[in-house]
Length: 312
Image (tube, rainbow, N blue to C red; front, top):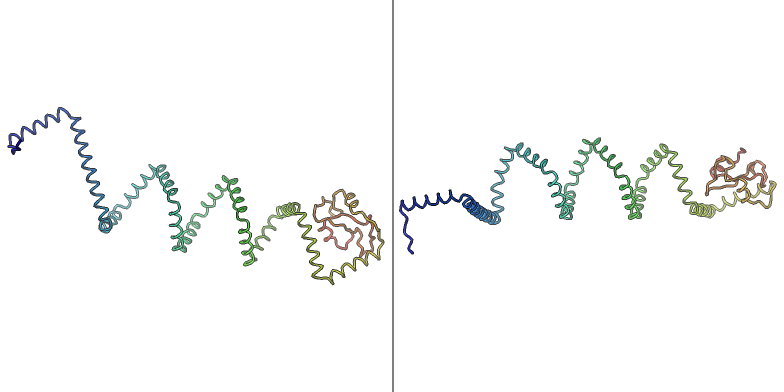
């Protein structure tokens, strides 16, 4: 069938018929128009994507000045809009950021590390400036966090120490060897500020390591005797001479003396430690005291050293 050009009458009749049909079937025509609009829109979007992919760099360079000018002219409005959007969608934004970080953790770490290496001084200066500006807030937050997560932090620190004990010990030794003065000053200040804690910790450590300490003491005495044989022989000879000049009881049961003491030091009258027990002459040999059971008492090693040749 041949297509003949429509005259004005035919065009008017066709337009009237179409209009009448649209009025009679509004929902159907609306759906058709919407479908046609979506189809045209999708086609235009695809065309724009293809065009943008082919001319990405040129378009970015061309639009950059306009974008900068628009941002400068509308900075406050843009910031307000972004802030309002962030406040309204805080939870969804946080979830998206968390998911992105989990999916790109390695690349993000590499980027941060590379940036820090290039801008190390700048990063350190920024951290120091932030700390100085918000020192009180940071200290309060850190204190609250440590109180809230005390058990978790202690467990984590303990696990880290056990996993890297040798490395940590080597680092502290090297650091102390390189600069011992500050460490000594800190230890001295802590001891002066917390004498009871230091004594209790020292006592617990000595009790827990009694066997090894006794072995160390014996080894030290032997090493000292080997290093200073003349001094050692002179001390032994002097002590032996004092015994010879004094009245000596040949068979003395030191176990019986320890039992008779009932576990108390003969000088300070406090309980004896498992390590550091000495047997002291009540009247020293140098003062003419006899070497007999009645003149010997069980004491702390420190009490015996403090007493010296005095008669208490």
